[in-house]
Length: 275
Image 1 (cartoon, rainbow, N blue to C red):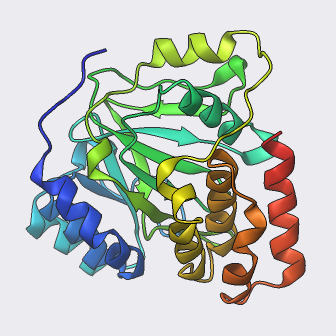
Image 2: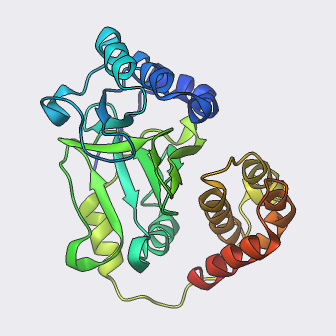
Image 3: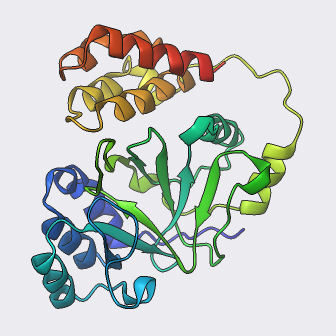
């Protein structure tokens, strides 16, 4: 698959304002996306179903329309249309789906190199944004690898959308330097279908490992109620990938109000799935 080389100006903007979007009301967040040229549509409060006449086809960057939508229904969740400015890989862990395990295998093969933004989802899964590859939507289906792809005629829920009783969608990282390489679904499915061989021992990567995981500790410490556990799980997996002990996140997680039992349970699950 070809790689997009031009970095859109909105990607740098996004990297600066993602934390503010996480903390914003739905209206302000929807307006921010539209201002960056990312088409959005309203979804029913607490849900994933479009709350507009023509569904996905109504997704827009028109600021007046966006303002009318969320002024009339301020609790509507936010959907972002894919296939226009971004595509998205959906990492699923619901009902035991091995989404993060599959994602780590692909990352080891450099097949996720273009994932320039990452979000945590209420279930503990995640979204990775990529440059548009021009393809459509794909689902894990019978392959059972826990990964779905949203491209042309697709959409994803985005921060600060909320699922009652589960939590919020939140951006956890945006790295403009990763923007460009598109995701090749055929290469992805081929890699995941290959027999699993002995996995090399993880070695520290220069970035996070060289800083002792300071960035991951900071991310966990800044997590807010509703998504603390999913952020902790995400950071735990990043620790494993970088050859770090996930327990270095313990104090940061405790500072957010999580109990030690909750923290250790989550980190044990991370260590078990990462084997």
